[in-house]
Amino acid sequence: MLLRKEFTFDAAHNLVQYHGKCEALHGHTYRLAVVLEGTPDAEGMILDFCELSAAVRERVVSRLDHTYINDIIPQPTAENISQWIWDQIEAPLSRSNCRLHEVWLWETATSCVVLSASDRTGRMGDRGRP
Image (cartoon, rainbow, N blue to C red; front, side, top):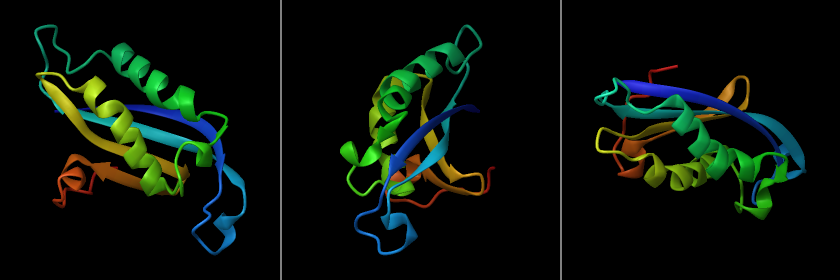
C-alpha cells in the first residue's frame, strides 16, 4: 500500500553548470510529493499524516522555503534536489512497517522528476503512477 503527502515551497536557484536560460537566477514554486510504501500498523495506519508532515516540514520545507538553493545544494537541478530531499527524510520516515518509496518534485505545473527506492539501489522501477 502507498501513502502520499504533498507540500509546496518557494525558492530561487540558478544552474551554474548549465548553459541556457536556467543559468540565470530564477525561482519556482516547487511541489513535492513524498510517497511511503508499507502496511497499516495496529492503529490501521502506514504512518500518521501529521507525523509525516512534521518530518518533511522540519527537514526539507523549513530549510528550502524562501532560500537560494545553491547555498545548500550545488547545481540544484530537480534531480539533485530530489536526491537531497531523499537523504534528509529516508531515515526519519523508516519504520518496521514502512519505508520511503518515492519523492516527486515539480519545478513547474508540467515538469517533475520522480526518484524511487529502486533508483537509489540502481534498478529501474515503475514510473506509471501520476
